[in-house]
Amino acid sequence: MYKYDDYDHRIIRDRVNQFQDQTNRYFAGELSEEEFLPLRLQNGLYVQRLAPMLRICIPYGMLSSTQLRRLAKVTRDYDKGYAHFTTRQNLQLNWPTVEDAPKILAELAEVEMHAVQTSGNCIRNTTTDQYAGVTQEELVDPRPYCEIIRQWSTFHPEFAFLPRKFKIAVNSCPDTDRAAIHVHDIGLQIITDESGKLGYKVLVGGGLGRTPMIGSVIREFLPEHDLLTYLEAILRVYNRYGRRDNKYKARIKILVKAMTPEGFAEKVEAEWEHLKDGPTKLTDVEIARIKSHFVDPDYQALDNQPSELATPLAENKYFSNWYHRNVVPHKKPGYAIVNLTLKKLGVPPGNVTDSQIEQLANLADEYSFGELRVTHEQNVVLGDVEQSRLFELWEKIKPLGFATPNLGTLTDIICCPGGDYCSLANAKSIPVAEALQAKFDDLDYVYDLGELDLNISGCMNACGHHHVGNIGVLGVDKKGEEWYQISVGGASGQDASIGQILGPSFAREQMPDVIEKILQVYVDKRNGEELFIDTFRRIGLTPFKERVYA
Image 1 (tube, helix red, strand yellow):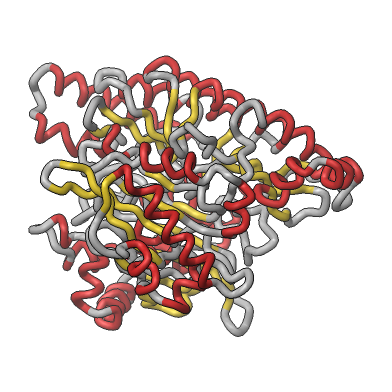
Image 2 (cartoon, rainbow, N blue to C red):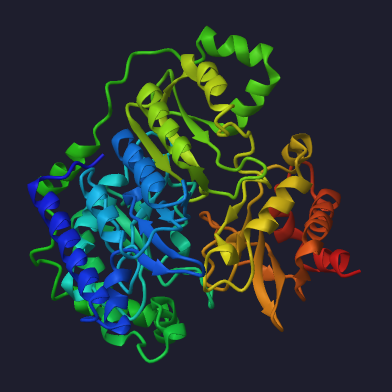
């Protein structure tokens, strides 16, 4: 993973000192609430329903064990002993004070962490596949390109106050997309052209929220070295033409739709003509410098399926269930990618305690070269585990709450904090997730359903990505009461789609039974082992609506 140089350390220390001064001036009455608002937001500090919330940046989801231990410490010292992993691969503290925020940032700076641009109308944390660098599926490791974007976008003066927040994701797998690039402001698919040269397919104008849209391809192939100049052209067009009079129409997706993708692409290409050979054009030297931070660890020469794995797989069905659900093939023989799920029954999805964070650090040191990855689905990954140690690891993580064998299933729910914390939420998300986990606690039934995404958001801002869940749940306000609207048929992969609203919303206590009816339609109508999303696309919305509202 990337290691700070002296320049990186200096700019983050300077930013911490700057924010400490701004906070002091705010409490002294020298800065108004309105003046302090954009300053705290661009340092990741919100004011939520019950307390401030600090969002800590985890670039492309990578954490070292040293950073994990510091996160555990600040969670314990400045919060209530637990934190929340988000769908943007970040970490949120839900109970810090405004006064303590600069102190937290100072402690994070010591371990090469920050909260810069985790909020505000700027370029947010660039995300990618949680298996980047270790999966067999990818064309190249996308993390160096995420790091290049991070370094370019952080403190970029031209893009500090965009019309609205801005999100970029990068994917390098030809057939899968765990980064959800189709629903980002900019999505980059790493590809090669006919001659084998590396580059990117560029998508613009995706996003969820009040007006969900799938991104449009505006360039089929962008050469590798032109990454930053082309991104800069896109951002300049957005900065010039994006709406600033109405925040609900300020996202780039609205601009792309208004101009049409073809019209927007023409503007970008014209702007790019002034930039393409400028100082931000990448060089081989710069790409190599960044890639040098992402070399393979000291892998051993190992065989696949050693006896230390084969024997417990044959003899222990519980281990076998976990292995076949939560363990993914690695690019190196004898190694495995291990998903540690944070979806144990009774625990809000994505939540971890300070002691669990410390245990994650210990596991990373012992089993995965001191590194861990955060996933879009609010789980964590050990990327480099020896197959011979998988049974040992499984026995160790069971009492820690990380071994629920439900990855990619109905109960591996994506869920925002909702009305329990967020001042924007119309309804609570966590109680719905807990009710559904309890209702469908039979793993045999869950496994029979196969891969199925269920996502929950507490409001239209869609932090839970409900629009692209196979089943999506949205909290809505109905005359001061909490109700829930359901959509069906969303997906976030290479075949991304926006779910269709089922019909009128439901009370919270109705939700488990309503979801059960939807699932029963799928079970009745599927062909063989057909996935839920494929059945929906074949039969459409009507059978689900008829069953639920009968």
